[in-house]
Length: 175
Ligand code: HEM
Image: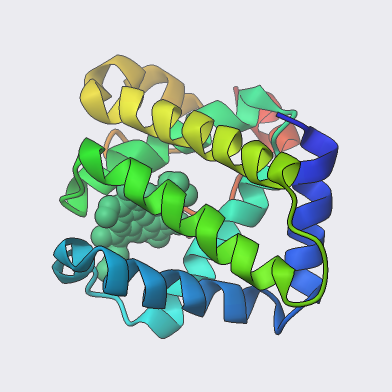
């Protein structure tokens, strides 16, 4: 995975074609059109949900070189998704959908290359695998989650929005 390319393309996604709002709304429009089976799982209005997803993708991109913050964040998120009744089999669809809408988004004003596509595919594969490993065995990650400020169910101990990442420095300080 090319970290520079990941960062660069995410920065472009913010600046181009209506920015993250347009990308986030396109994500859900395409997801529900192409994978209607997952539609009933989403109860939060898309207008709010897309902001959480984009904040989460932004946090992941920012922490991609900080596994000590990123991994517990993803484990907690994988465990929270159990409460949303998601299935491991849904992950490839969500990954495919994000890469496809990002490609459509960036193609409007500039390049979308095979390298960019591969970078995002491997990033999402990594994210999905780490989320799934925790969802498959939540009890195993209890201590790790507690150190990083999450409850056993993956929600924040401090009542914070769980999709915003605790700064790596804070993780080290409380760990
Ligand atoms: C790339 C992997 C994924 C990321 C980064 C991601 C991100 C998020 C975020 C940030 C939230 C907001 C709530 C929270 O943080 O707990 C959320 C909620 C949710 N996600 Fe995901 N997600 C991913 C995969 C999936 C998959 C595979 C599904 C299956 C369909 C899914 C379905 C949902 C549902 C149903 C909710 C709750 C929506 C609601 O409140 O109505 N997510 N996701």
